[in-house]
Amino acid sequence: MIVTLKDPEDKVIAYCEYRLVDHAGRDCEVGRYIWIANVWVHKSIQRQGISRKLLKTHIGRFPTAKWIYFKRHEKYGGRMRKYDIRRMI
Image (cartoon, rainbow, N blue to C red; front, side, top):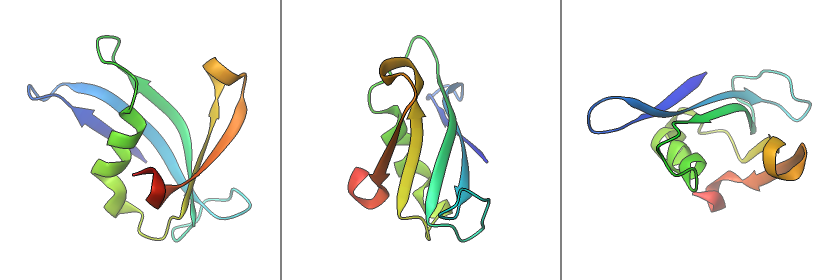
């Protein structure tokens, strides 16, 4: 699923592609994990806090999720990160 953030002029400034998965990483409609596959942020927008803003905006779509995880490609060389979703927002 893809979720977006838009500016007041209705232009997309960020999007996030995610999947709801089970403990083994398989797609699951009632999964406890959210796998963030891709995040894009427009170059004119400051990246800091965008993931949190996307989650706050769309958290109601995944009520069963407890954890969120993703790879940090640019800054940490592909290291995996896992966060408690309710504490993150």
